[in-house]
Length: 304
Image 1 (spheres, rainbow, N blue to C red):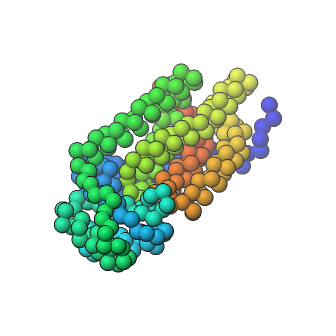
Image 2 (tube, helix red, strand yellow; image 1 turned 120 degrees about the vertical axis):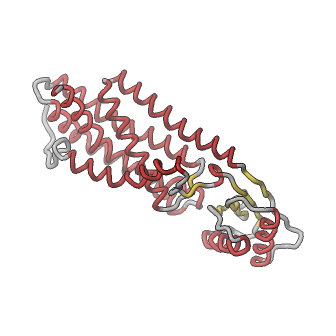
């Protein structure tokens, strides 16, 4: 088989690419480890920690500027900064405000402040004003962790059956790498951590494992065609042979997601931005992490 011209050895430079991954994932890992001890680096939305949801009719198109002003008005009236203010309603003229638990008096004060600032009709009242308990939030957090854990476990079983255990373990490490970097994005950009995270995480798990399987398939094919080669050489050759496919697929996917980040409303943007980063990380991990990690495990097995 004719080999592609190679300018970078992914296997030999695994220490370098692995160090980059550790640095990028460190913030997410620290946030994850501190959360059980009550130290929250994440901007947990009320979906996970409980709080108050209010929905107002603004009688005008809700823009990013308007949601920012409403957030400031509510914070000034209640002393509590909303975790999110997003556009809602079929006509896009309503806002949904989520923040920590507010008393009925504080909710009334928030609505009156918004009414005064935007000259809302005296006959208006909040469309919705409800409290989400912390116990419900705890159930959602457990569901998020459970859904991600089950997905990773099933992927490990699938890759082990299709290839072998060490390749499955390498693929899972790459997936955990992608999720940790996505968590870092949630912390750094203060993205509200809500049910969108589950959807984003499962989306990235599916995308990343698909890219990794393409590389592993080529590794398996090259082992059959060139059994005399060292495993590390086969892995590096396979990565280079699939590199253009991995990059092109990632760019094609990013074109659509970036448009959602740029033109989407806040609720869509808060989902699309982590997915955008996750798609890039999925490409990086499938090229720079999964294959070299598989080679590392094989080397340790032979040395034992």
